[in-house]
Image (cartoon, rainbow, N blue to C red):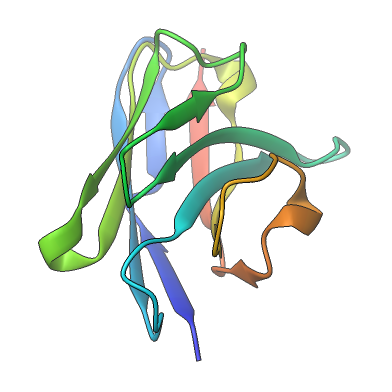
Length: 123
């Protein structure tokens, strides 16, 4: 059974940085697609970034492009989301999600989800 555990959330002032981690276990395939999503109160879930661990190809939402970087450590089965120049509008619960292939950035494209980690950015 695939399990995803996020960590690294917290509170930071605008302009600051945080690094989120997503540790994956139970995946029987050597490569998979791991995405980061976020959901703020009263807003729809938004796909933030994704990476295909087999080749490292990445995708970023326009709202985070140039500020967020997704990366992987295959030895640790962990994917990171480095978030720089954080803005109050980045405040949300951040979720990592996994799929066998990177086919899209809708929540329905990812069958496995972590429990989420809160990121709060104050102005």
